[in-house]
Amino acid sequence: MAVNLKKGQKVDLTKGNPGLSKIMVGLGWDAVEQKHGFFFSSTPDIDCDASAFVCINDKLSSKDDVVYFHNLKHKSGAVRHMGDNLTGEGDGDDETINVDLQCLPASILHLVFTVNSFRGQKFDQVENAYCRIVNNSKNQELARFNLAEKGQHTGVVMASLSRKGNDWSFKAIGQATNGRTADDLVALAIQAIRT
Image (cartoon, rainbow, N blue to C red; front, side, top):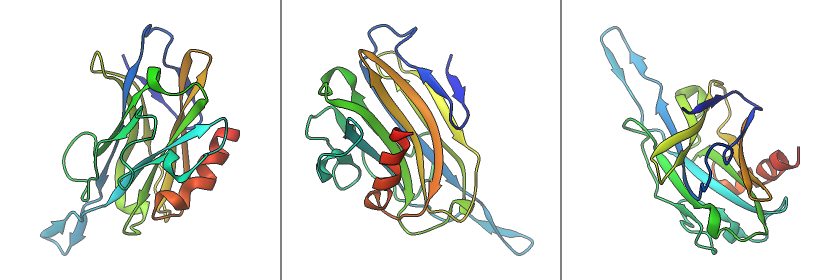
């Protein structure tokens, strides 16, 4: 059974999941339906982008350590973005990032996952935003963080994945910020793992 986390909570992923090696991080969101008069409504396309910041200790060593729609694969091959969703349409995950925990170099201690609105649409136009971790070998959801906050921000540091020895934990962060690209979220993503 998946653990539902609130902002600031953390769960040990490897406890109860011996041999956990390949996970999928799914990020999803829906556009808020907009009313146009009494009988007509529409749902706009929301182009949010998921990114993973691959951190050595508590910093990025290069721009190649950001995995997103322009850099789909980390240089280690252990972190792969599965492609850009330009509309947010459909049920389930809108963008996914696969992580092979066993292939990550030992120097990588943290991965930070963010979402930003590429077109600058505000998060008060987004609902049902979430980040979840799935054990790929069992197709089993391990943890989920549902983001309830709306607002005038254009980006969110959603969650982090951290290593201590051979154990991995998942932390719900939910820190709102402004930024339309992954580059705009670097400082806050790094700050999130230092606190």
